[in-house]
Length: 77
Image (cartoon, rainbow, N blue to C red; front, side, top):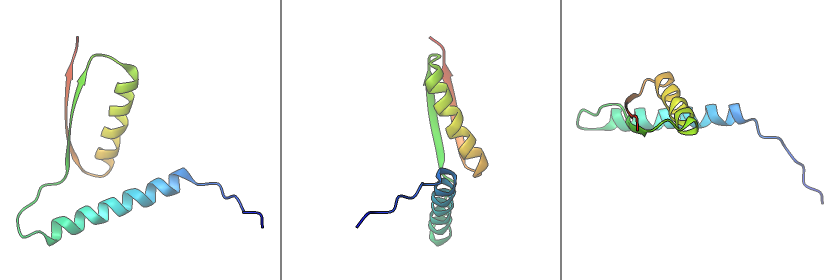
């Protein structure tokens, strides 16, 4: 029997995953007996590699859109 192919909607899948992650984080924070801060990403970017800069830029965009914290340290060589 032939299988039916279905195209994956990347945006829909991404939105589902992000909502699920946010739900889990909020659940952990609300069920904690101690004060927890929001997740924070620390990034050290060394040099001027365009691919690395693009990757970090997209991570920071995600963090800002989801109200998470981040620290970015850039070191020129």
